[in-house]
Image (cartoon, rainbow, N blue to C red; front, top):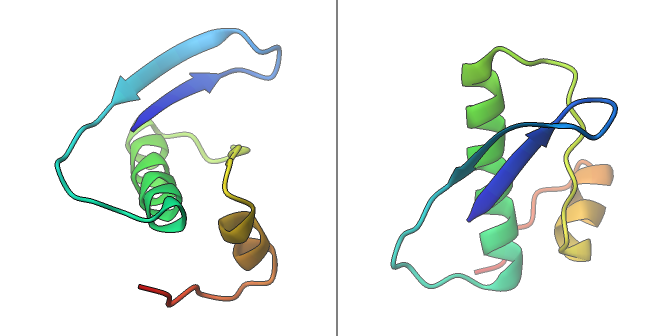
Length: 71
């Protein structure tokens, strides 16, 4: 998993990368990455943040405030 942090102008601020050997579905990997991203941003002390995700299923579930309990 990789994530980058940019300011409101799109300028690079910071990045991190994390690797583990577990196997995830696309939705699980995206949700796990979002969780780790939220932890990272919180540790950096940021509170007004927009996250960009690639998995539509996770995005839709977040917008519906519905937990995805698959697998």
